[in-house]
Image 1 (tube, rainbow over the protein chains, first blue to last red):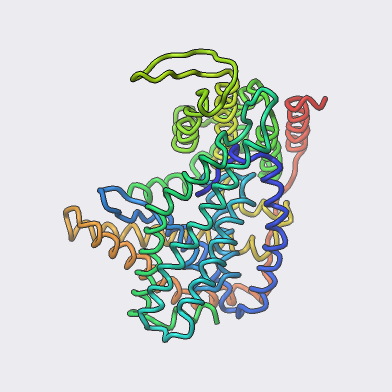
Image 2 (cartoon, chains in turn green, purple):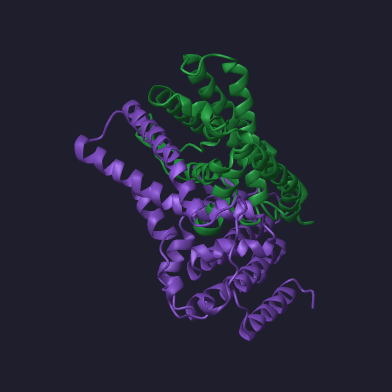
Amino acid sequence: MHIPDGYLGPTTCGFFYVVMVPIWALASKIVKKTLKAKQVPLLAIGAAFSFVIMMFNVPIPGGTTGHAVGGVLVAILLGPWAACIAITVALVIQALLFGDGGVTAIGANCFNMAFVLPFAGYYIYKVISHNSPVDSNRRVIAAGVAGYIALNIAAALTGFEFGIQSFLHKTAAGQALYCPYGLNVALPAMIGEHALVFGWVEAIVTALVIKYIQKQDPGLITEGRA
Amino acid sequence: MGTLVFLKESVFSDEYASRKGFMQSIDPRFKAVSFFLFILTALFTKSIATSLWLYLLCLMLVCVSKIDLGFFLKRTWIFIPIFSLFIAIPAIFSIVTPGEALVSFKLAGLNFIITRPGLAGGALFVTRVTVSVSFVVLLSITTKHFELLRVLRVFKVPHMFVMVLGMCYRYIYLFVEVVENTYLAVRSRVGRRVHYKKGQRMAAWNMASLWHRSYRLNEAVYNAMLSRGYSGEPAIFNDFKARPRDWVWLACSVVLTFISLNII
């Protein structure tokens, strides 16, 4: 889901930077206000955690592997605003040091994975889990459903961003300048692979990690957001 | 395991950044700004010739920076440009991009037509992606990573982000070590492929355990910060010093950008 440089035109890249700047500023303000001073390293831990989560190869049927994004998991553990900062930091490091995800596409990548993904996932989790006890199965199911739906929403957005490039940037001769496929191809391709494969990986990982944390140290599910 | 080893080798290796090459001698702030200009040029250009010229410039910079060209090509082409090449292939045919036919052939009873706008669009797309990835990789391997993260201050990134970035970078190294050791321990005990359901549980357990261990580390890290003078507001040291050659390099980069975009 990481959009590399060259897939989105300058208009889309610029638009998402403009959208993300106030979100980053607000996230910074809210986190500074709500996070206790001694929890500051938690942001870095969350960022490193979401970076490393993407490196875990999760086996899927058929002998192959996929990886989770972990955005919903970090949002459940740290809250959505702190998750926004943590995932942004992870995406910036990936783009600058790893070449994964473009520098010009950081705004779009952060909108999809550091804003929409954790916020959608967090609120879906909140609605489904409601006020159930920290160690209830309902929270495990809520985490899985939230991981699946939120990842698919983010994937659909990414597909939409790819798909509009051929409308926005084309020469008179019909030559595509950026991502060459329209919405009729990009949207089903992105939704299809995430609905069939990666969404399930995200759901399984999010649910199982919450289940293990419930068993080992249930306080962690609410502590990080305190 | 392979991913983790690749991550350690590529992200945490400052081997090339320590060499005495041309790009290594440029102030990281000036280097980052100039490379950002080149990436923006690659983004804005509609000409394959400009994209190719930028790629040539990048390869020339690789050579004068004492970087092994084979290593650089391997590092940049795997995975994004090759993936983009595969994505671009269907777009060169008339079914995706209609237009003036260049080549047509029959395969398995189906008629395939490669069109001029399709081929031009596909080539521009792949070169644009390759140029951008190449400049980012060149920036990353010729700059000490900690310095590169500090450069973000130039772009007025808030202190909190810069501090979290610096800490996160160190944590990633620690986490990768923990995960690598855990996988090694699991492999040495299991000794064979496990069923995918078991594998999923193992991966999830690893993540949960990683979170548990690192969360509990938080307080120790905070105490370490306090003992080093942290008072609630992060302080970022700015010990970069610009020299005349940095200004010359930046001026050259701006001129090259303007020429590439036909502004002058």
